[in-house]
Length: 167
Image 1 (cartoon, rainbow, N blue to C red):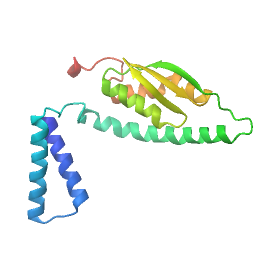
Image 2: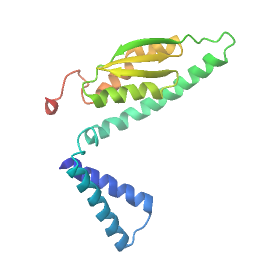
Image 3: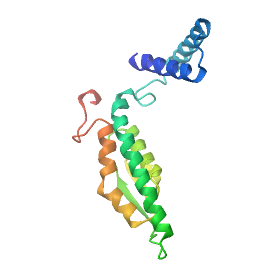
C-alpha cells in the first residue's frame, strides 16, 4: 500500500508540473486520473519494490553526482585516447562479477557501466557481466570495483550483507 501511495504522489506531482493548471476542476480531474491509473496498476499487480523503488530514493541522490562525474572523466579519457597520434585504444571484452544482491542492483550496475563512455555492458546473466572496454584504463577502472561498491551501497548493503527487511 505504501508503494501505491508513493506512486500516487509522484504521478500527481508530475501531472502538476507538466500541466501547469491550478484550477479546481482540472486539479480534481488530474487527481481522479492518477487514482484511476494507480488503481489499475494495483489490480494488475505491477506496483512493487522494483517497479517503484522508493527504498533507493535518497541513496540514488548521492550516487547520481558521483556517476555524472565519472561520465565526464570517462568522456575526457576517451577523447584523449582518440585524439592522441598513437591512438591508445586497445578494445577488450572481459567478464566481471557484480556484488549486488537483487536484479535491480545488477541492472543499475550494468546501466551505469554502459552510461560511462568507453565501456558497454554486452550481457548480464546471473550476476556476471560481459563488458567491452575501449581502453585499458577503462577496463582497469571497472576491475578496481569502485562503481560496483557504490551501486551495492545504493542497493542498501554498504557492509556487504543483506538488510533484515530483505531476508
